[in-house]
Length: 168
Image (cartoon, rainbow, N blue to C red):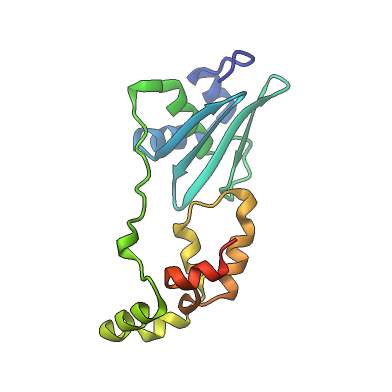
């Protein structure tokens, strides 16, 4: 955090109230996937029931937290975990997210259809692609992606070729 506001665990505990213990448990469980300091903010990704993007900053001398989680507390457990990760510094290394291997995807629709036929799961291709959204690390400004996925089926985005047609 920048010098404008020196946050300590004690200060954070006072600000977060009952949420502090849950955030501390997330931090101790290693749920902070990334933690980056830039300017007057800390940004990171925290794994909860989904992947949440968190930003904690100082505004007018006060600590402000923004998180993609549905909780409406001023400081949620994900923000607490992120700040604790920052305060701990190098003592608790951040676990980098595992990048998907491109060999585990279907190059084209023919590969997808062959896999589906072999495993007798053709019915799955009709599901809305929105089921994939919980596995994506989306930023708040990418809200439109969930809307787009709700309109498409897994058949429409199940291969690199097909997904490429719907990419930005």
